[in-house]
Length: 270
Image (cartoon, rainbow, N blue to C red; front, top):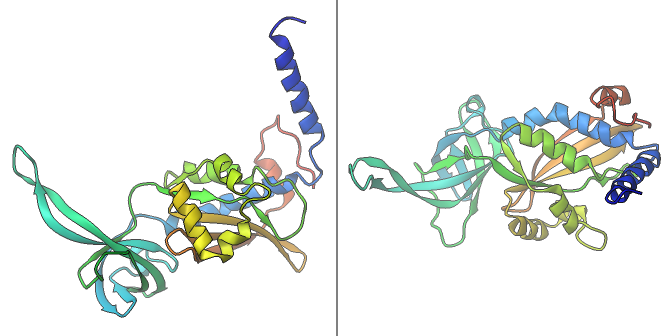
């Protein structure tokens, strides 16, 4: 055999075996990806850049001048900041902006047409917020991590590539920066962290988020209710480790998932 050809032949043989040995339930991953494609716009809207002011503080409750008409939604998490002194161009001495101190976070709980109520999450060592402090969702890309799929439907399907499908959809929105699913998968390898811990143990969720330097977790869950299989997508805050919001939708039909595949890919078989 020609030198250098053996590795290539071996790789092709391995790929052929992988395609031939694909489980009959392989189509479930495609259905999950196609379903999330229909849900993704809701997540993009929830993280659109917005900026407003605190108008009142009552204990740990903050009232913001951001209402439904301004893009506020329950479950959003905004940074609280206080503007400081101006800073100037070193040559022209023209004012360029103001310094800012981050005071903590505001997690929106209730939204009205012209205002919203949020929970104050303090930042250690920073003063309490007061009226006229600012709140915002950054205009920069939001860094997130996607956990492996939690399969509560017990389908036993191979869903390992689902995080890659979801990451591709979110990256294309230009609103998110998704941590490499391979690096995230190593954390949840057999014998390591379980996805349930991110959903149920806030301290665990925040500690792992700091390790990955992300703003939050996106947890895909496949579950079945009365014979219908659903995709449930839950957003978990990296600040508090609590679930802020979730979206649920029935999985699209296999025929719909099939339409989104390339001609050279193996067929969907449920």
